[in-house]
Image (tube, rainbow, N blue to C red; front, side, top):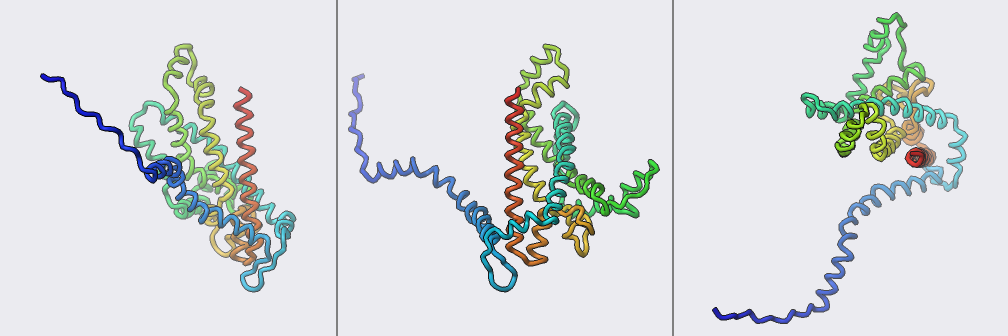
Length: 316
């Protein structure tokens, strides 16, 4: 056979506009792909936030003139005992509900991470409370914590204790509302912890088992250190959700004046106080100031949480 090779054709030079289009594609495509998120965030996130701040600088009634007052609403808010009472209730409910919630979620995640029968069924089961309507949950738990015929009073009656009016006291209302919050969110956090646990290499557990480490020792020396980023994430999301707690305390004692969170405001949260000022008293400027104080509170607690986690991680 003759040794024939195909003729080599010279590479065609790219036209200038094709070169410019290619460079624009390389540089501009990433911005084009992420721009829808930032456009939507600007419309539905940043603009309402900035507009609320603008409203908070005014005396803004439902009817009448909108008068610019500067920081007067914030000065009035810092001297408002009802605002501080709502802040105390919000932080108290957050602590009372979050601590046991995380302990239970970690325990569930560790249990579901083991080889047990019908493991998938249990994993799906723990998230069912989270998809249940909050109104239905509150209605059922409202009957459980009812004063006259509630299941909670029936149980404590076995131990010889008197019936409790769960909505009348601060401690009892916080406890009842925290149970509702924990019932909804414990399974959700447990699944997040479980996903993080499954990402931990099994070789670490096998090596520690060869060295004689017990399961408890493995949990504190391997699982917990590697779960810190996940715990930080769930804590921040819990802070945001906890500071915005609204539906559970509102529906816990429905009826006239429900937005006040009890006759003595014993379980009124910051979000309820915001709604009360905005849509009951129609003081939108003052309500805007409350909204911004909630935003600042979330930022402060989140920063404290991040600093604590970094300090604990650095201490190791």
